[in-house]
Image (cartoon, rainbow, N blue to C red):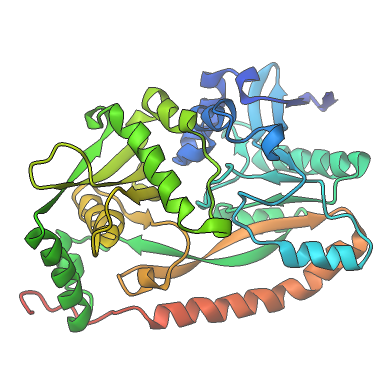
Length: 394
């Protein structure tokens, strides 16, 4: 499907593999957000993780000028919301009660990736607002012609929200966590910003692991042994199995195997061993780019007290300080994050409904919903164990 407007050519592709890797990444890499880069999206698709059979029909929108890619929107047509981590069941119920079809819908995001940073990929040498407006207009028409209930963008770049509100999208606020590096010299410098009780707790938890002869390594890129990727899938699988019907097991073994061919430069593992044993006791996987770090997956082969906190919070913070990381997003969920130095912060999804009455309903009530979420964010930040910087104490 192709349309042409004032020299800009619009087209849809059913697979990221129909776009040249270098051409796509010329736009994507400027964002320092690996989850929108060609390799990540290709791996999600070709590993069998996000497929039409699993409810993800790829429909990426491209904008070209004189045969050069100047804009792109990673998009998926969906008949459900599983794997989005935007829990929109309440809005689906509102639509159903009003006799309005909620599905199918079209969604812009990196599948199974609740990390903020989505936005359209637009070349800096073209009028960005014009390309953005053209994409939005095309999506409006696509939804109307094909009977889609809405268009949504999940976990968007917060700086993009105001721009998209001008095109009729309304922002829904969600609570998330973040650690920020305030020019810490080392881990103890950061630890000194927590209150006395929490400093003691962190040190006690780490000392328990030392007494149990647990050693931890941080590995990046080509230092990660190839065998660890299949182990990481096993950890991912076992962690999700513990949650039963609440699990989020969407990725295939092929996805983890593919990471070692295509994403090594962006990967960091924290690995725990018992003593001198060569086989890992537990692993956590992270993605990094520029000055940002994202926690992704974790699991263990043996339950050990406090090991989750070490591999998912303390060791990554230590690595972040040593490697110039300014922002660490540890992933969703868990009040224990607030008690271990992670601030609650808003993330955003953007929504626009095809049916005018549903769109009006959403825009009428979303501010009230957002106010409630603001209250929850404040509650979580009240749990923060923030103290005076007291170096050398405790």
